[in-house]
Length: 222
Ligand code: ATP
Image (tube, rainbow, N blue to C red; front, side, top):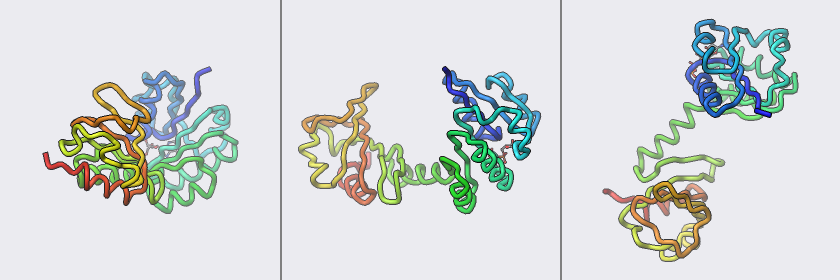
């Protein structure tokens, strides 16, 4: 059976989640207070309804507890976001993802039992900053305060060298999880694998080790 999603709040963030889930063939209920927003998503989501999710009876009548995953993307109105999340937790929804506006909001959401709290503006800011500092860093995923997964572009300085030649694991303590070349992805590459300029390398490790490795091996000017 298809997974059932509900997206509450159809601003830019909630709207793009709703659109992407629908494009992936999921069942999506789109909910917003604002009728214009709901009309915008009437042909995109499976169902679209005008509702105020801070009203407990409204949530009940939508049968919200039967959804597999509910995404709360209420933006500026932090009070409504918290109240909605609290009622979803109390209703026993299995997966609740909530967009936080700031660190205090995030703290409260975690405290009341949201399963996942996302902070898209902050996270995207961090990712873009890494990409601005080094154009070889294509993408960046923070795993914790100290560990990350990073996508690096191989330049001339590593072209033709194998992972053994570069001695990445011993020298930097990082692990190459995969190498992407054109459309092919080599997961857990062999240490004898040669790198080519233009390869995309996916590395996991401590931030300071990844930075050291990136400065030594991937900081090409061209
Ligand atoms: P984004 O950057 O993603 O657009 P935003 O901060 O601009 O985020 P808002 O526009 O503030 O997001 O809010 C997202 C949507 O949530 C709005 O369309 C708003 O009508 C809706 N919303 C706010 N409160 C409720 C509520 N209690 N029930 C349902 N929808 C709500």
